[in-house]
Image 1 (cartoon, rainbow, N blue to C red):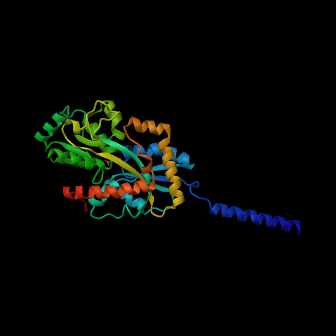
Image 2: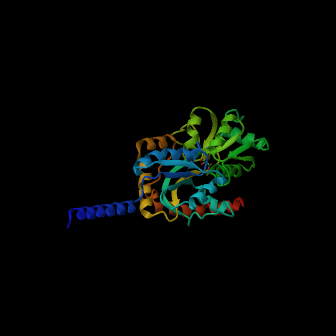
Image 3: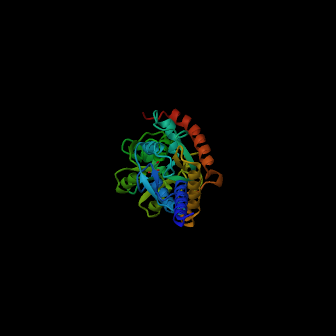
Length: 327
Ligand code: MLT
């Protein structure tokens, strides 16, 4: 064989090998991953997303950017993710609103059990019942008396139908037998701004946002929504111990991808999510906010799917009985 011809053959073989390597290049490639968050920047879901984005990016050797797609209690973002390209480059962090939306909304343009792949459960977060700093009631007993005597004057903020602030507020109002004027926002980030500014009276919100503000004395706190006190707020009693027996709301979160995202990508995203949750800085920050990382079997695609199914079943009758829904 002539040397020139031999060289040409070798080059052709090399470029073929290169082309098939490029073709076979598995996720993650060098494209960034977008983590969609269904509520406003600065709020509790956004806090968790931004905490995880950098260590997840490190584990995937790419950039993970957070996108806040807000509105309709998280359902706009869920629909956006359900329709996104299933390549592994769009992921979704949402809380238990993914389960309650099924009963709260008469029409949904997505199906939580059919339109997503499941990456894993992420974090469990307690809530706190709060008021603006100059609200007249100084403790839980005074809060109840004040609300009962002034119900037409008191406003309660939330992040819309499907938000956990909305659910917690509804459970609180029904537990004390009053109906207050509710004020919807696109997330409890903006709701908190108005609470701090004194434009709204009350808010039930997650510790991922509220612990620093409570510690700094910028808002009033009447109780935590878990049945045990929180290590981050040891002097704040539970609502249960103050007479609101059985009052309990703990917010679980899950990470999703559009249906059809390849298993290989889901496995890598799950490994990156678990690596982020094992990062010492992330663990410490979550502990400082009294937020818990779920047990290992929940940090899996099957763990999230099973939990979501159970939560859809659990909240259905509660929501139907309460007669709350949106068209
Ligand atoms: C948020 O991130 O703004 C909250 O999770 C909204 C909510 O209350 O569900």
